[in-house]
Image (cartoon, rainbow over all chains, first blue to last red; front, side):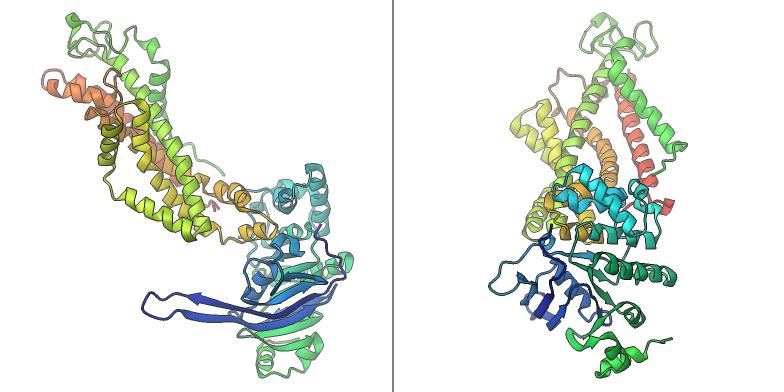
Length: 264
Length: 276
C-alpha cells in the first residue's frame, strides 16, 4: 500500500534543522542547531542503529524521517522516490513507508480505544473495509506474539512490554518498508527489553522489514544492530559496521561513550 | 471506569435533582390548577391548605402549579444553554489547543474580550437589545457560557496533541477531523461533562436573576425568578410567596453542584483512575 518494495535503500543527505525561539521584541531570537547536516543510508533488511546522548538531535532526526517535523535543508529518498528535498514535493507521512514506534508505551496508546481499533487505525484512515481490517489485525497481533482475542481488550489491561508489542503491531499493519523505533525499549525493564529486541530480530528475518533503531544504550546496539551511526551535537561523528565502531572507535566521543558502558 | 454510587453526594444530589425533574415532567398530575388561573377569593392562602398544597399568591394563583412551570422553564433554558455552549465551546477550544498558531490567537482574544464583561450585564444588554423571548434568553446566557468549556478543552488539547498516540495517528495519515474525533474529543469528554454540570447550576441561577429583574422569558410564563420578584413585597405577610421559588432554585442548584462534585471525585486521578 505504500508503493515501496522491500529492496529500496533509504538515503538521507545533509539533513539540517534549526529551532528558533523568540526572546521578545528587544533581544535577538535564540537558535538551536539540532541537526547540522546528517547523511546516511539504510539498506533493505538491515537493522541500523543511531546512538547518541539525549539532546544530540537523534529524536529530531526521527521526527523528520517520519514527517512529523520538516527539515530546513537536505533530502531524503527511498529508492528512486524523493520523500523530501529541494525541487521535489514533500511526500506526506503516511505515504513514506516509514512507521514509528515511540518511547513511552503508556502514552503511545489512546486509553479509550480498544487494541483492535488502535492497531487498525491506519487502515481505518485509509478506508480499508472492516472485514479485511480485522483479518490483518489478527494476523499482525499474532506476528508480535499477542493473540487475536487481545484485540477486544483495552490498553490498561496490558503491561509495558505488551503495549510496546501493540505499538509495533500498529506500525507493522501499515506494511512499512522501514520501522523506526525511537528509544522503543528504554522505558522497559531489562528482561522485557530482551524479549522485544528478540522479537524485532525475528520480525526482520520473517517479514524482511528494515529497522532504524534509535537509542542511547550501547549494549542494545551491540545486541541488535548491523550498522551504527554515532551522533553528537547534531553531527555524525562515527559511522560503520557495528563491530568496527564498537571495537575500534576512532572518534574521541565514541570512545568515551563506549567506555562509559560496562560490557560483558 | 468504576463509579462509586454509594456516596452521600451522589445519593443526595440524585434524589434532589430527581425531585425537580419529577416536578417538571409529571407536575400536572399533582395539581388540578394551571399556573395562570387567578382566583381573587383565594388569594394568599397559606401552604398545606385544602386544594393548594403550597398555598396561593396575591392573585390567588396556585403556587405548586407556578413552581412546576418555573421548573420547566429553568430546566429547559439551562439544559439548552449547557448543550449549545458545551458543543460550541469544546469544539472551538479543542481546535484552538490542537492547531495553535493564528486560530488560537484569534479565538483567545475573543475569549478574553467576552471575559471582560460582567456576565449578567452582558446578558441584560443582549436582552434589552433583542427583546424578551425564550430563544433570546438562551442566546444571552450561551454567549458567555461557552468560555469555560473552550478554556478547558484548549488546555486538554494542548496536552493531548503531543501524546505519542496522536503523533502516531498523524504518521498513519490521520487528518485534523480524524484526530479530533478519535483522540482529542473522547479524552476530554469527562472534563466537559464535569464543567457542564457546574455550568448548568450557574445557568439556572443566571436565568432566575434575569427573570427576577424582569428581563427573562415573557412575563406571562411563570418562572422562579419572577415569582421571587413578585413575592418580595409580601414577604412580611405571606412568606411562602418568596420562599417556595427560593427553595426550588436552592434545591436545583445544590443538587447539580453535589452531582458535579461527585463526578469530579470519580474522575480524580488520585482515586486510582487512569483518565487521560
